[in-house]
Figure 1 (cartoon, one colour):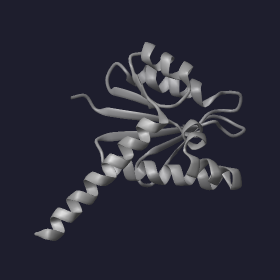
Figure 2 (cartoon, rainbow, N blue to C red; figure 1 turned 90 degrees about the vertical axis):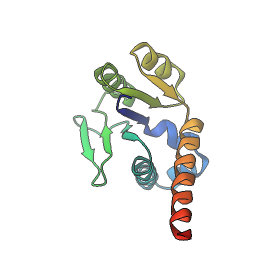
Figure 3 (cartoon, rainbow, N blue to C red; figure 1 turned 60 degrees about the horizontal axis):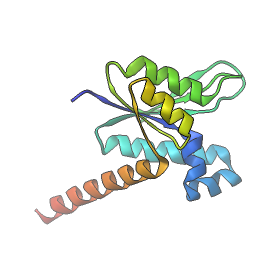
Figure 4 (spheres, rainbow, N blue to C red; figure 1 turned 90 degrees about the horizontal axis):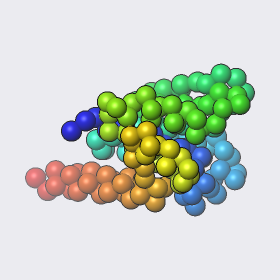
Length: 145
C-alpha cells in the first residue's frame, strides 16, 4: 500500500467543528494550535502522515514544521490555502495515497481530478475518534496483562 498523506484544510475544519469554531471566535491562534495538537495525536496513532494548511499571513508562504512531526503550512500573502493544497495534492498524488480533508466542494472536486481523494470534516472527526478508541483499547489490553 502506498504511503498515506492527509492534507487538512485547517480553517475549513475549524469552522465546521463546533468546539473549535467557538474557540476561534475567542482566539484564532489558540484554535489553530488545538487543531494542530489533535492532528499530531492522530498522526501518532494512525498510518497517516499529516499536513495542515491555513490561509496565510502577510509575506511569503511558510512551512512551520511542528516539533511533533506534522507540517503546518501558511499560504503566502495573496494566495489561498486552497491553492497551496492543490499544489501539494498535484505534487504528491502520483506517488502517494493523498487525501484532503475539507468541506469545500470545489476543492474536493479539484483534488479528485488531480488523482487524490477527499474526506469531509465529519469523516476526519470519525477517523480521529476511531484512532483514539483503538489506542485506548490497546492500553486497556496492556493493563490487563
